[in-house]
Image (cartoon, rainbow, N blue to C red):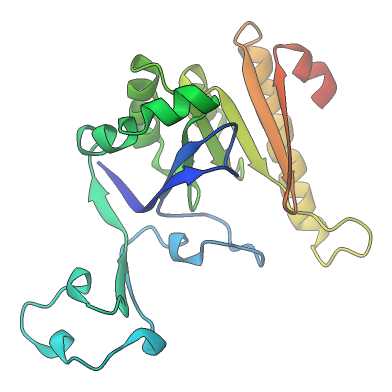
Amino acid sequence: VGRIFDIQRFSIHDGPGIRTTVFLKGCPLRCRWCHNPEGLSATPQESFYEHKCIGCGECKKEGFVPEDCIGDAQILYGKEITVEELLPALLEDRDFYENSGGGVTLSGGECLMQADFCAELLKRLKENGIHTAVDTSGLTTREVLERVMPYTDVFLYDIKLKGQGSSHSHAEISVKIGVLKLTFACFKHYGEHSLGFGFCFGHFLQQHRCQCQIVQYGQ
């Protein structure tokens, strides 16, 4: 069972082609630039948007749940779902994937915090011929990376550094560098497995297709 907080269709910034992005709950980092703060906590959270409230009073009635809010003023971020329940929704846009070279991307939060769910979902997607991508901070273990790597076509690494005059601490940058070293070690372990990788600096994503030569480049 996994815990997700959104499914975004027709996504064009989370890997090649037209994609469906699944956002999973939970993240070990607290980055100042986080675009999805609703994904930080691993547990479901209720949010209230006062400017959307129409004052209907339905939320005061017994048995009310956020999904019943007419104005979408109350939203529950996070629901549990199985691979079997999620897979049909991801396969609905197969035609768009095939015609654009797209597929399915797992994001978050940090999707690899839910390693069991990710590995099983990626495996099922590959069994159905779907291109897969994992959007990650890389802050995980080598064991987790090795588990998902056989079922992942592209890894997208989010490294948003400002360069000269950066306000990010040396500690933050060191963590990112350490993560990359760990990942390249995994690439070396799977030297014959063709992988793609992308690095996201700010809003710029450069993707490459690669095999084991990426190890030399990374080192």
